Length: 113
Ligand SMILES: [Zn+2]
Image (cartoon, rainbow, N blue to C red; front, side, top):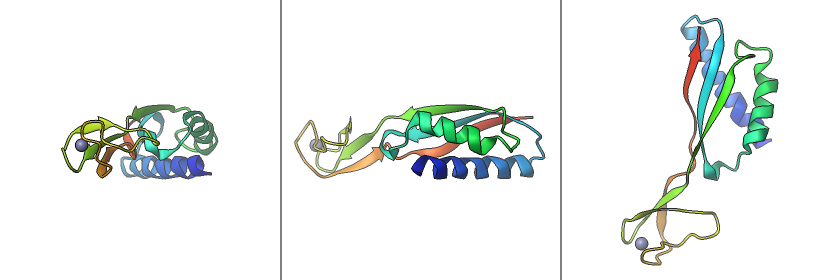
């Protein structure tokens, strides 16, 4: 499952930091999740509960910040929000663009004691 591997990735980053900083308990994890990552927030939360249970993050709160997908037009350089089906510049109609955001998937911050 896609979400499970995301959560495992996040947990390994947090656990490594916790170990490096000699912390004992993770209170809160904030992650950024792009619209185009195709991950279900509820599934992520469920996976997180399972994965975090035997760890120092067992009682941690998981905050998921959604990042809207935007693209920059290669022709007119305007930036606009994109949805999966309509991949066309709303300003000039060009179909060549570069995704600027929406694939984010990372730990933004975490709080631990
Ligand atoms: Zn354009």
